[in-house]
Image (cartoon, rainbow, N blue to C red):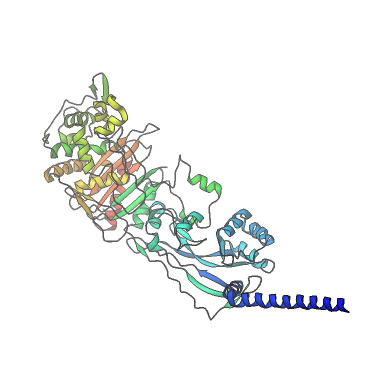
Length: 571
């Protein structure tokens, strides 16, 4: 009896202890940790659904949409609810590696947040997902606004493209989340904060399988804020025409802008790429093709490729000599006999020109005249003035990145060649060969000094108030003298194929030697000669002489613009 009583007391004590522990833990769960477990329960029941904000539209100068949004289907998952069978099935239907799905799951700390794993899925894929919806856990499909470029590759380098943000970028950009898009190049990158909207949020009740039950009225949704629209200075019709003019050539660039205010009408680079392909994701082979260094379609040749500028440098050498009062316009040197010797080393010209004055030397693009002129004024004067005209500097255009090019001066030559550099390097520099390199945009901006009576245009692609010109101290009469020579180049010199009926065009041809193949063809010009409305630079890689290839293309671009703006009439 006593032993039974002892057992009963032990049982009673155990029971009391058990109930005490239950009471203590219940108190802890409800009082101390009640909010935590209520939140977890709510997260099981409530899904925060982001409503993607459409990016702002981008317009050309005439109000035509050159970037907008279109609806696209997406597939997303809730990590806390998904299982291995669902991952396998999704990978099969969406034709993606399951490791990609798992990687995205690992990106998100909150397992109850919906993660987009595939954008722009096809109707067929959507149908397969809908058919399997009952056996799949924690998935959903929906519609989102996707970036769309209605003219495909036409503005690929000016507009750039958007792509899905990476895990590393999200760490530094807390306003973005997994599955968001971000501008990668062009205007999409520069004006990302302007174009990106603010996503809306809805609170949805879900069941244990992650299926949506309905909206929760007790949680106030956040409205979508679309991105702001962007108006550019680009001209759709001019871009379409240029694509036709450049169709038969594999690589090159063309830029056109108003030299008086810097508004860029055209920024064309070839080869092109289709920015729409980045929306749904590129295959490995597609990405490798875009990064092929021999073709480099992603490279914006207008702002990033640097070329020897050939004879287009000659007007700047002449202007430097005149402004520094080192020569008069009547200045002559030894006549051109087709070759000029520096010691025993021959420096050749493309033609025998005989005795020439400064203006005729520009019109006929005589190398031998400029060998002697460059030698006469020296490297320090040449480098000083080329620096004034913007060589070796960024132009200030609202695109990133931009190549500064190379402007060699005395120190640069000494650093590269030591004491071995000679006047031969000055000879090459004086005709735009050798070490000097510039982008097509840099070259075009430099030529605005002739179109603007000594002012350099600052190019821009958006209709935002900004500084339009940079004035340099230069003799206006000297500028006018060179401008007269540039008119002669097109009227009767090497640039006659750029002529447009009944309009005076100023310009200069260039043929840039290329150690890796055929010469590059260059032409820079502006029109009308008085109060010019358009300045054009065309570079066609590996195409030959500037007067035979680039000049006629530039002439067609100028004519198209002048006709469009009714500055000339068809005859």
